Structure formats: structure tokens, C-alpha cells
Image 1: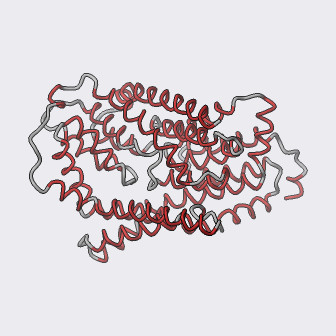
Image 2: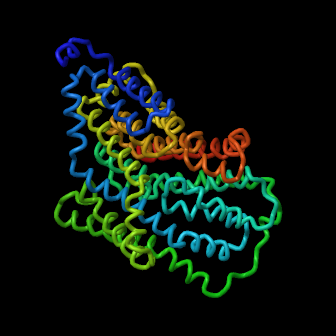
Length: 441
């Protein structure tokens, strides 16, 4: 069978990649699970590049048996379990209620509440923040579609760079593997992308009730202390992560080694997550059975499977040298690199509706095209910005679905609300890309 397949002339690298990419999008469109779609796309790419069926299977197995897979898997599991424990123990609700008291203005609280919840990624997290956004609005008459749009939009303003998001974690891994760009540099250059999204989100308050902008009474004594206590797992993670990264950089300089990337580079976030998780469980009051049920949740392993399939897809693309070959073809066709870098993640985000999906399918294609450019960080930021905007506009984004359902609205009413801030955010991302490319070029 392999010999018969190998007699078929391989098609162009660009056509092969678009074929595999299109297959992933088509399968997800007809409700095939994302992890199955990505695996099928990986197989299609390998076969279209003229590799035999046996060699394709071997490549997939090799992509799965990587050392950095273990670290990545542990991070994904820890993040999701931590957020579930905090939710079960009421920590998340206490965080939001304290914020509402401290910020005083209802409009500020309505934006800050989902943004704060967004620091701890959880599937469908907008469903948790939805009633709290409604509570922040108080007795003011605010339409369900406005509440829905505010909750959904501000829930995701940090997703370009916050290192606890599975999409960001996966992107940092892929970016390091293909371009040598460190995690710290990725975070530094992606961080400003949150600014146009926050500013764009202010459009959602245009025409809102004046009472939303009236300052409330001072918060009761002890509110700040309660907020600090409720957010203690977050600060534990952040402090350990920051200290660990600094330590690795310093040790690397002393020894002449690059220690702050790859599997070893994930040690600080793993230690931080483990410490934060242990602290949260120890102070949670949950029974052993409740903790065991949390670890057994299907959501954890579904997300883990998506990441594993993505790493297989990435390994296949690397092995067939798709990036190099496609780059040569695109250069010959004179297609602007920036167009490819922006459009592919945008399409993937629209169709897949999840960050690990657009990162896993589009980034392995575009990163080899820009790996040798001095302004590679500008292209990475552009790719993530448009992929993120694609998932924000996707009708299958789970947060989009649950917030519409909670506030009893619909897509027809929702899209006119979120399209203006989306356009403003995209324009800001393009302006940032052009500035960054000029500064780094």
C-alpha cells in the first residue's frame, strides 16, 4: 500500500498545507471533534507531501512521544483543576463581589469583573461571570444584549499574553521551537495587544444608562483584605513564575546555557501552579471525594487531547519541511507575508472558536515563513491578534454560546454589538504590527 501511494506525485507545498488546513476546517464545520479533525489534517498533510501511510503513522507516534509533552500536559491539567477548585469553594465569587465594592462605579465593575475572572482561564468561564456582571449593573435597566456583549468581550482581553491560557502556552512552545523566540519576549511583545481590545470594548458602553457611571459609597472595611485572600492562589503562581524565570535567565547567563525555554523553561510555571493548587486545595475544605471528582472531569482531558493532537500536527509539518517549501513557493508568487500571517489564524479562529485550535493549526504553517525575519515578534503578534479576533467572532466559541444563552439574547442581536469593537481592535493590532515591524526591522 505504501509503495502504491509513493508512486503518486506530491502536489505543491502550498496546496498540500491548504488541503490539510481546509480538511480540519471542514471536519469541525460538520461537528467532528477538534482533536480528531487536527489528527486527520496531520495525516492529510503527510500524505499530500508524498509520504507513505506507514511513514505517516511513524511520524505521528514520534510527535506524541516528546519530552516536552509531559510538561505541557501537566500545565494544562493544573490550570483547569485550579480554576474548578476555586469555583467550587466560592473564591471566584468572593473575588468578583470584592471588586464590585472596591471599584464603586457600576460600569467599571461590569468590565472589571469578567476581566478579573479572565485571569483564570476556564472553559465557558463567561457563564460564571455572567450573573456577576448583571449584579454589578445593579437595578439599572440594562438590556440583555449589552450585558452579554460586555461580559463576553472583557472576559478575553488578556488572552493575547496571559501565561495561564492554554492557547498562549501552546503558542509559546511553538514559537520557541520554530523561531527561537523566548517566552519572555513573546509575552512582552504580545502584552500591548490588550490595549486596543480594552479601548475597543469601551464602545459597548456608548449610550448606556447614566446611572452606570455614578460612583457608589466607599467599600466596607476589610474589603481589600478579603480580595487579597481570595486571589492568593493567583499571586502565588505569579510570584513563583516570575522568580523562577528570572532565576533561569541568571543561571543561564552564568553558565552560558539557554535555560528559560523548552521543557526546563516550563519548570517555574509548573512549580507555581502546583504550589497554588496545593494551597487552594489545602484551604478549600473540600473532601477527598470532591477533589477526586474535580481531577476526573472530562473537560481536563478533552483540552489535553486537543493539545496532544496539535503537537502531532506540528511534528508532521516540521518533518516534511512544509514551512521551508511553502515559503519558497510564496516568495515566487509574491504573496505578502503579512497577509498570510493574518488571514490563516483569522479563518482558523472563526471556524474552530478556540485558541488552542487556531494556534495549533495556523501557527505551524506561518511560523517557518517568518522565523528568519528580524521583526519576527511583530509577525507573531499579528498572527495571534487576528487568530484571537477570529475566535471572538466565532459562533461556536463556547463563551459566546453560554453568555447568549444566559442573557436570553441571540446572534442576530449580538453581532452588531461586538463587530464595532472588533473592527477597532483589529485596526489597533495592524497599527501596532506596522510600528513594531518598523522598530525591529
